[in-house]
Image 1 (tube, rainbow, N blue to C red):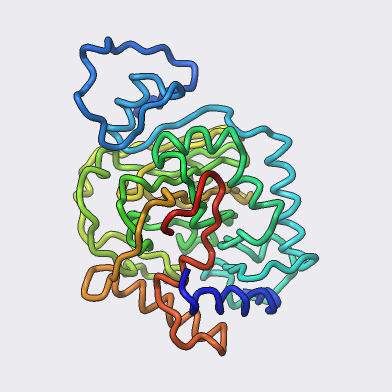
Image 2 (image 1 turned 180 degrees about the vertical axis):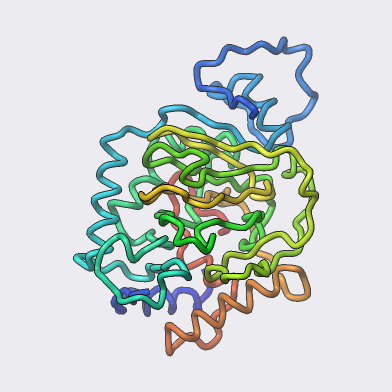
Length: 336
């Protein structure tokens, strides 16, 4: 970790939080693939006794896999309680970013979950960060990253009922657009439904197989009623590609590759749709310079945000912004 990123970690520690259909295979699915029929080399998964052969093949082909009933309802209820405490400003979390939907951002602030559409970077909140360390999560993560695991990006999404402007949707995007570390094949997201998630309240939508393609150019979509901060979308992809709507029950968890194109639809219900997620990377991954690449726009936006929030941010790089919030959850911190 660089001196600049360590300085940023110290700064955030002294600041108060500012307002701010393909059927996925389950854990018990038997292997229907004879070993002689397996490909000579798996690109996206490591050998383990956890994933069956057909589960590995499914992820290799589609870029995601849904595991049913993985996280206990008791844990999810505790995460929900902590989220609500944060919304009521009963706890202060260093470095936490609190976001509100663009449709309600200018409304009168109320210290309640209805004012918050997402929190990011909760790695300093020990209760929420416990999600990232759950053994039932990590045993699957290791299948994609290997044994040395860093938790790099944390989110709890509280998708609001749409105010009629369709701002509750999330444009189709690739998560790798936000990450200045590689290789992509050793990064994975775990995304857990905190309640029933379906097409009515805006479930995840994925384009199977797009993880095999390259990182595409992203920018803010030209939507009539505006787009939420940092909700970049892929500028050019085939809209005719098959889509899968990932309808999930409370505790279900989907693991997906950072190049998989995905997004979410409008929340057409009167309730909020909650999910908690963490992006993991192998600690053996390394940082890259995104200057001159399609990621330069998000790099500039992140640096501007850091400079706005923290007065002593001179010299902080895009890579630093990720290094200071990454936390080791298993093994050794070998590189990241």
